[in-house]
Image (tube, rainbow, N blue to C red; front, top):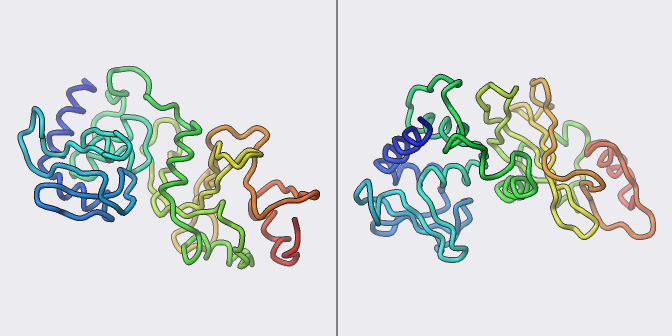
Length: 256
């Protein structure tokens, strides 16, 4: 049963609460019986705290966490979901089992907690924002290496591009997700609000795109929006793809 599976995983994770924090929230640090960090997405700081020891049930249980700044709270399954940028319970459970080195159940028996749909729609605007927030600036990353191999070295005004070292890729609707490096691009509307994200999965050495069936995928609300570089005035240059736009910009740095 999904609820029983979730409860069992939460209890097993609570026994390894400090190890979970060190793995998924490495920006934080231990302070007494708590792990302190900025937020569940591993931002440096002290507003979020995770209890590292306690009874397995009831108030104060190990693994329970709370963010004083946002009011967010949950258990270690919630922490893994947010820190890893996952959406469906089956993916969270698979990641928890991977961390705990547990065998994987029959895929046919794994459902969303409660037997229903995910609390967040896959590919939503919120999921796209979370993914982009978890990624890092592109300079000096494998994504910059990938672009350099495409003869694109001018990275000024490319704040819309970031890099994620372990962005999940699902080959099809039934297969387990794979963690692969990816270039992440923010899709924004005319007011600059992020509405989606574009993912380009990369080869491990940055020599090109990953050798997978669909190395490019978009998520969120895309119609009428785009990935923007620089600031346009009365003239706007528009292209079909990220590299397609950055290539002429490399030789025409004044291009709007």
